[in-house]
Structures are given as C-alpha cells and as structure tokens.
Length: 353
View 1 (spheres, rainbow, N blue to C red):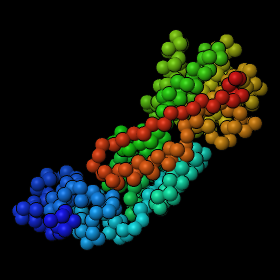
View 2 (cartoon, one colour):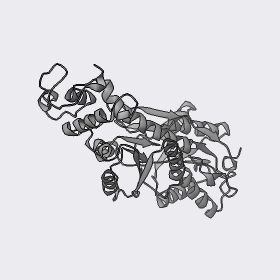
View 3 (cartoon, rainbow, N blue to C red):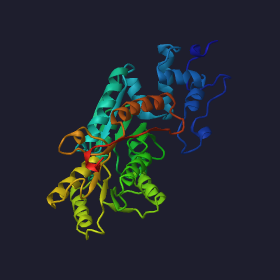
C-alpha cells in the first residue's frame, strides 16, 4: 500500500498500536514532523510533501495531515493558515525603521522574489525606539503569516526569537543566533574600507559605530588597524543623528595634530550627518578629513554626497531572505542557516581617491 493511501486516524500507527502523544514526546518538547507522521501513521517524507505542497499526496491526505499537525500543536499558527487557505503563502515583513533608506532597497528585493513565487506580503512597521515592536509582531501573527522577514533588527537576539514565537523568522542585514539570517559580510566590509583609507596614508582613523556589541563592521575595522600597527578609535553613536553630530564635533575639535584625518561612519545615513558637520566647521572633504559610509544608498552617488561606501547588495539580501523563508517552511526542523553576501568597495570623492 502506498504512503498516500494511509489515512490519519490520530489514534493508531502503521502497526495498529495506539499512539501516545504528549507522553511519548516528553512534557514541554515542541512537536516535530516525525511526531506528525507518527500521529498519522504515515512516513515523514509524506508529511514533508504535504507541508511543501509538492505533488504526491491526495487532497484528502493533505487535509488529514494538517488536521493531525494542528491537533498535536505542531507550528499551530502555520497550520491554521494552511487549513484556512491551501492556495497562497503569505509572508510578514517586519520593518524596524522606515526612515532608513536601506530598508526600501531590501524590501524591493523581497517584493520581487515574492512576486515571482506568488507569495503575498503583509508589512508591519515598528520604530527605532522599540515601543511598537511587540504590537507589530502581534499584528503579523494575527494575519496568520507563514513566515516573518525581519529587516534591520536592532533589538537583542533573544527578544527577536521570543517575539517570533512559532512562526519561522529570517533576519536580514544582521546575524541572529537561533534564526535563519541573510547578511552582508560586514567584517570584510569594515576591513576593506579601513584598508582603503590606510592605502591613502591615513593613520588617525576614527569610526562611529553602533551601540550594540559585537559589531562585525567594527571588528573588521579594528582588525585592519591593528594589522597596520595602529590603535583603533571607535565611538558608539548608534543611529541617533544628534549623537553622530556631537561625536563628530568632538573629534574634529581636537588640535590639528590629534584630530582624525578620516572618519568612518557605520552607515551612509550617519555619514551624511558627518559631512554636514564637517561643512559647518568650515573644513574640506577630503582635504581636511576623509569620510566613508556603509550601504551604498542611491543618494550616496549624488554630486553633493559623492560618498565612498561599501555596497552590501540590499536588493539581493531581500531576495535571498524570501528564499530562506521558503526553505525553512520546507524543512521546519533543520538547523538555522546563515547566507553571507560579499560587499563591494565603491570609491568616490569623499575619500580623496
């Protein structure tokens, strides 16, 4: 008898023995695909076919597998969505900072890949303060999304994992332990920008970094400075423009022989603030101070900014995020994966080369 012909009674396995559910799994352990297969008396392969919506299972068997999965609590939110609609997947997109221009480029990649796969999108927007985080995630869960894509998450990883709950989540632009992640190689990018400035003769290089630690961009910068026999200087400013401006004024207010000859901002937006402060002090870029950013936003190529930056290929990050979410739905119990994209150095006038 083929696997597809076996029904899911919820009470007997393939040998006719009664299925003991929670007791066999152990109290507190999350049900797995194997538990669903045991509940139905079918193979794990057939259960996988049902969740992947691949050919090889009748509609009757698909419905019974999903009902059994819901009965034992296997990824309840996902299964409820399947029972409600077996046609179209829907992904939630959790946007932490709508004002960050990188977000738009990442979202473009998400939308392009989702459209090509017939996946619907539901967006939820939080804010940099984090006050709306939990509410936004609840709204996405209420929409019965199949997976959540997290763009530029700045909160601690344990909180991200807790908020995601039973819905598969993929972190974009930042590596988060315990979640699938799609990121740029920030350490390579930080090292690459630093080595570029070192090659131009700069030795007093200051970096304006994020408030969280460790930061791969900072680690890449520090490694390159130490390899050159120089002491790194990193000021944690985060995303706050006022903090970036204050730090820049303090650095450039030092005596000429002590102030940095180059400032690396942790992203292009912060670099724009640095450029404004340099201009307000009557200093020249790059004659008095070279400036670099990170992300290679579209506005960075303009004549006013002309900003040297690292391109982390935001559109491709978004596209791969959808791929990662689809792969997770096909293999819910697999180990978390991280996809890393190599950045490119984009040299413009702000660094003087």
